[in-house]
Length: 248
Image: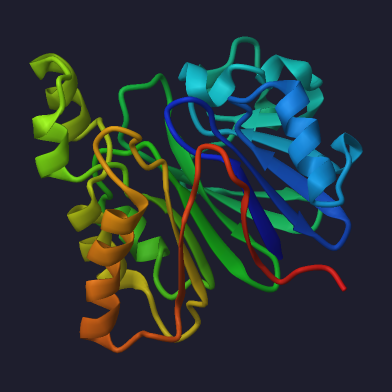
């Protein structure tokens, strides 16, 4: 299984997962032109997208979801009008999508029906952004996966120093907001294991975080637990970040 985070952040989100000739697009908060360009740079075409997953109904995630046929789209019930039962994802159940076995998690965000995923092939990957906290129930499913793409949105001190209004800071900090660097590292310290190969810190704030700060906060945890064999990356709003097992 290989992954490519095409864009990650408040200006637009999209990620592409590929395995044995089949592809999943997670969210489409970027333009079709950007999507096709980035896929082509990776050696893919739009036709390599076989399934589209929508995490929630915020604009930076669903902006251009309409460019895909509804038969390709899978999400939780309240995230999209007129979605039928076949394409509805119920939290804590499995859905077989071609070569992928998809397990849906309930997340905590101020959206209609927010969800995250564990995607399984011969390997397992967590995809979870836009959540104010991670429940013990979710953590029970997150142990010792191969790959983690997880939100590390902000540094609390940096957030408080921004000129954002208090209501927005409160929204980001609360249980239906976004994960901060320290919370993310605390969760990951509990769940990573011997099978874990790569961790990507995603949905970084452009104003209340830096790649260096998110990386360094997490790297201290890696040192403490002697898990220096894990590859750590930070996702970008602009540049594609890739990982997993690539095609020959």
